[in-house]
Image (cartoon, rainbow, N blue to C red):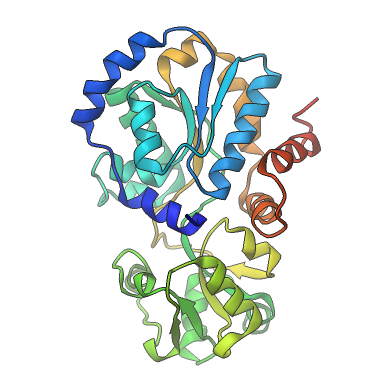
Length: 313
């Protein structure tokens, strides 16, 4: 499963709360002691975040057990709610689907999305959202840097203005073009339409393919659908257009931990806060590129980042 596929599953799959509740009592009763079980989803960024968490907790003296790449959101979220794992990195926007509140405008603002996710999970599941990274891994559009410079493109408003001038050709998946939550959401918010005859629809929906098309100018393409922290953005010298009017939900990563575990190991909060504070948009793009583009192991990239940031002795 590619990173794109894993994240698409992440945004569409939710846990049945009734089944989770049935499992929770037994699992929690079985594991009152022992190490903190740290899990992650399958994609590149999830595993990077998982390794950062493990390294930081290890340095803080918190005993851990690793279950990285445990599965897609449905599996990992279900395991956390059931008490089978203790902590994993999640994205604020996914809480909209966990609690079936997709229409709430709070999800399109970073501060409000984080606060609402934390409030709902604490009240209903005794889960605590720790400090988040200010890096939005949501659907976005990136433009080749030379084009962005020439056309003075910074925001999605700039992007649509350039599209109206015929300066852009976009590579995207059929889902991105057709889904109400994707390109049509941008168009509704910015009051403009991207000409469909200037979109190259590529099969499979892998952002690695759309980014390469833009970077290499395949079929005249110079813009691509991406996720905001995709590793290829930095590696291929693309520029993400800022969604300054909030067309998309915000997906900022944060560690989510069971309240009982945090009470037992309060050092978890202080150990992870500076780690996630060190991860802005450009940093996550760069770190993801080292794994996805350069082929380096996620644990080595995590360790190097923490050492460079002065967070690892």
